[in-house]
Amino acid sequence: MNRLTRRAALASSVALLAGLTACGGGGDDPSLLSVTQIDPNLSILVEAVEAAGLQSALTAAGPSTLLAPTNAAFASLLAELGVDKATLLANKPLLTAVLTYHVIGGRVTAADVPLGSPIEPVGGGFFKAEASGSTLVFTDGRNRRSTVLEADRHASNGVVHVVDKVLLPANRDIVATAVAAGTASPPEFTILVEAVQAAGLVSALQADGPFTVFAPTDAAFAALLTELGVTKAALLANTTLLTQVLTYHVVPSLVLKAQVPVGSAITTLQGGTFTVDSSLKITDARGRQAGIVATDVLTSNGVIHVIDRVILP
Image (cartoon, rainbow, N blue to C red; front, top):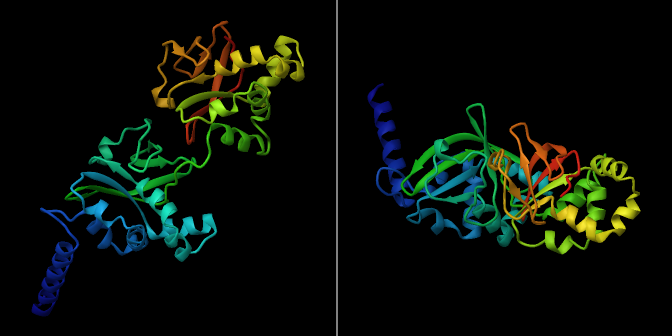
């Protein structure tokens, strides 16, 4: 390295240090805000933080953990929402809700992220994390997945994990999620939705909760009708039986797949219990078995696990 090169490198280092100091860094590390400001790949995040007026939150003592979406992640979000950047930045309530959904209280390094358990950000709601090989993947409240591109950028007041997709808080409760699945092709929960409506349980399942719902598919209900030797109309008309059966599928707490107490009795909203084995087979109160065929469908007030047979108290 010649003298001019060394001089240029030294000047660059001094300028960077001055920038960190100006941005509020403390100790040996810059602040969370500074970590984002010095990375050109996070410039839209910086604009969003400024537009929402959240700079002080990222320079506060904390500690906090920031999931930082890249510029490419924000570009993808704009396309997904069908808006331009100016429109997004002007919507302060939405922007605040989205950004605070990316902040976790406490310094949570990649090694300390609780895999499979609900993670509650400071903005409310929850999401979950899983490991894909050596990579962390977050699933947000709308069941969209975001991968950690770079973990553990340390700051004086926390830690930053750079992610490839903007996380969004849930916009559907359990009932709305089931209704949306019922309109999919092929439909999945049309009979379940009809049953919930017939039993007058819609408002109960729209409450804050949280709830865990083991949701039988249309095929599961069709098999139940054959088993009981009744028509769908007759089942839906028997609201007493219907209420008992449906509330037996609801657990009054948030239980993600990784938290299911294998082999232990699980108490339902109906008051009865069932068990789940290590292969995710449910044994109901009548000794009948149902398979859990899909897990961890996140909603605003709980989680849905899809089952292939209606369980009975």
